[in-house]
Amino acid sequence: MPRPVGPATGKLPFVVWVLAAGTFLMGTTEFVVAGLLPEIAGDLGVSVSRAGLLITAFAVGMIAGGPTMALATLRLPRRRTLVLALAVFALGHVVAALSTDFTVVLAARLVTALATGAFWAVGFVIATEAAGPGRSTRAVGAMMGGLTLANVVGVPLGSVVGQATGWRSPFWALAVLAALAASTVGRLVPDTGRRAEVSVRAEVRALRQGRLWLALAAAVLIMGGVLATYTFITPLLTGRAGIPQTAVPLVLVAFGAGALGGNTIGGRLGDRRPMATTITAAAATAAVLLLLVPLSTNPATAVALVFLMALTGFAVNPVVTSLAVRFAGDAPTLTSALTTSAYNTGIAAGSALAGHALGTGLGLTGPALVGGILSALTLLPLAALALRGAARPAPGPAPQTGSVPPPAAPHAAGTQIPVGR
Image (cartoon, rainbow, N blue to C red; front, side):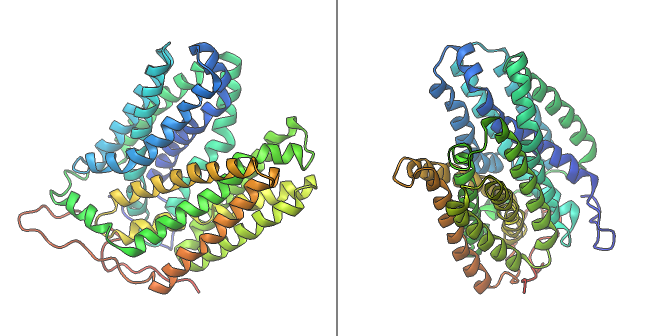
């Protein structure tokens, strides 16, 4: 792997930014469909509600496919896995762009989600190893920043282009960019050779740790809380805060800017004080979302709170992702995939609960209340994690006779995680 960058330089390896560009492409494709559903439905001859299955299929592929693909590709060299994932990603978009059959497009979305899960699972591991233990959370924050930037730039731009020139145009653009990314990754990511024969057993063994599941629970709850509110933020802004429909995209850009800032803050503080960072950010997120219920009648206050919920909520993500990978010790790939599944599970569950609350007597404030409760519940696994001692080193896998030892990783057994004060 590339030589870890020490704390003295403060710089992340270039390969981390290349991987972040990959997450930008994959984040764009996950959410851009939402802005093109009427065009897709009309072109493929289905209802808008049926076209919405394209979003559901991608979420299901990410939840179930990430861990599955992580295990399926475990014995492939990591560089080859990344290149293959990007190639399949590009091919899936080509198939979707060429097809006139909804079922084919739906299948292409599912395959694309599987490739995305494989890329994220391996990409997070490579990014943390390349950055070194002193910059691992910052590296995760940079990669997740690519996903956040997709919501700020990629999704709005893709929606505008798709509405102007047809929904297939963004799919062609994503296919070309993914092919270019595959070529770049193939040149920049070093070949680590074939991975250990016992890796599958070690990866599964790593899941026995209670600390790991506490980190994953925190990921589900914090993402569920923020996205429960964000999914239905437009009705709140227009129907309660009185913000014109034409101004809503500007508020969403503010949300994206806050999320990008939160990833950056969490990435920079999380390596030194992971528990203090996550607990403070989760508590602040819960407070902001609960304040959104009574204070969303004022446009300025509503916009400020939308920005703050993204800033505080997304500060948790890179820290819990990095902790989960560290807890896995020498077997981080499956764990990395499970963090992606955890975030998508939170999105799906939080949005479903928020949609139900929207139809009750709570009305437009229902999603924010649900989000506040879920964010507050995030404090439970985080507090349990702090009490269990996040500084304890992760147990390494038991040695196996005749196996090929895995390459040394900066998060192997014996690496301690500083507990924040």
